[in-house]
Amino acid sequence: MTDSNAHDFKRSMQQRHLVMLSLGGVIGTGLFLSSGYTIQQAGPAGAVLAYLIGGLVVYLVMMCLGELAVHHPEPGAFSAHATRYLGPATGYTVAWLYWLTWAVALGSEFTASAVFMGRWFPGVEPWIWCGLFSLIVFGMNIVSARFFAESEFWLSLIKVAAVIVFIAVGAAAMFGFTSLSGNTEAPGVTRILQEGVFDHGVMPILMTLLAVSFAFSGTELIGIAAGESENPEKNVPLAIRATLWRLIIFFIGTIIVIAALLPQDSAGLKESPFVAVFQLTGIPYAADIMNFVIITALLSAANSGLYAASRMLWTLADQKTLPRVFSRVNQRGIPVPALLITMLGGLLSLLSSVYAEDTLYLALVSISGLAVVLVWMAIAASQFSFRRQWLKAGHSASELTYRAPLYPVVPIAAFLFCALACIGIAFDPNQRIALYFGVPFVALCYLVHSLTHRSSTDDANSPTPTPQEALDAR
Image (cartoon, rainbow, N blue to C red; front, side):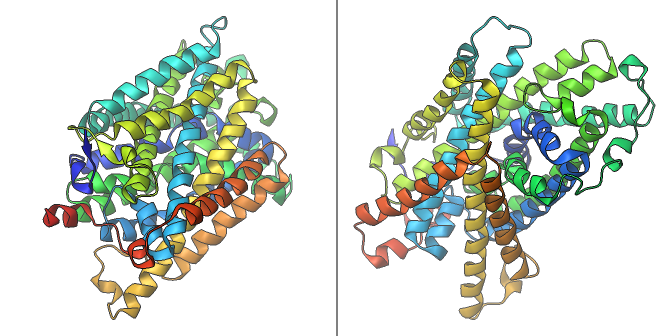
């Protein structure tokens, strides 16, 4: 094992890996399980609107991230960007927040997997499945970055295919091309339109924005993987465009099908709405097949999350704000100590035998969702500051290989929408735990950084070298 510099990471990821890595990180419990909670709280039409807003927000954030990632492709991604343009204390906090996002999300993915395994093995304690899935995901990350990317490519391909089939079958059932069980008439979009968008009020939509944001979290993985990708100047913009359009189609298409076919009082966290909808279609074994696919999808999302969180710990150590042991990588370019400590987040899933799985799951989702929304706010603020400094230095926007349009509208709008999602959970007693945990966590990060930071101001504000700069320096 060696001390890590950026050049110790292997540039082995291609564009197809970047696209599937981002899709793999996003398509997880937020779509397969939390979508039921959104419909239950906001109603069919309100849920569709909430996901439309979520799609807009992630589009704005990804445009900001694309500009930063292409200009500064490095494993530290938005933590390094925040260090450069918002200050070292903020960069430190962003890294810890993103680590928290995925460390806690690991617990939610494993907990949800145990819920779905309970369909087939109701007598097996959930923590047993959580422990088994933890070992599988750790194994996929420990071999090599290329093995991780390849395994994630195929796992993501399975879940993408499943979502496409779900939308196709669901749409056919909506409009009467296939029959529904119990001789139920094809509903079309009646169930969505019979209630107005705001029949439940504005507040339920606002309260679900954090859960929706959690559903879209993972798109930012492209920024992290840029530091280990071939030709990031070309591949990152292409991957961002491909990912965004696929996600918007997948998420909006899925929520329309679920809202149209699944009664609001049947939605929730006890069962995946995907499984419930397939049960309505009456297709033999379709629900069990979808249950298996969803478990595979959750492992894929956990696989991506462990990758992202371990790179954030590496960034903190590389910036000398964590012990050097976390900046070590082995000969295959894997930050083993960072992987090991990140897996501790997955151990939260073992509490599923103590607390009800759905209660624990929603708490984990809320904490993870708040953390990622705060990271998105930092991405928007970093791009705003970067572009301002770029123009102030005498450069023009046309010189940037990839640039976010409509500056400064895009970063400001992204920041404000994210702030709205944070405010919304204060009114939801089921998700308020995120604020009780998240706000003190952020304050603690700033406090710890101020107490432990011993570098000079110049050193603290000096940019972390890009992988190519580090390579040239050798």
